[in-house]
Length: 58
Figure 1: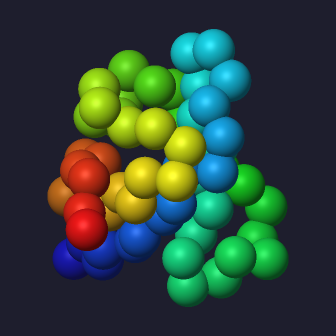
Figure 2: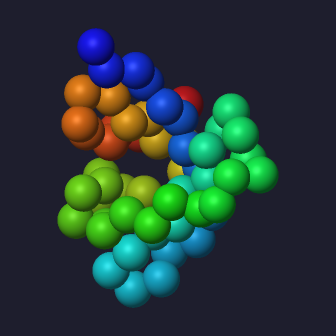
């Protein structure tokens, strides 16, 4: 079973974005290829990872 994990886009650097886990902000940032994220993301956007996909959430 897949669990939803929420992230904040901490920074964008070229083809990669660095995500901070909402539930545990002290964890190391997760580096994700921008191709796997919604096109409209920007720094500060909140995304959810669920069912092997990222989507923007409010």
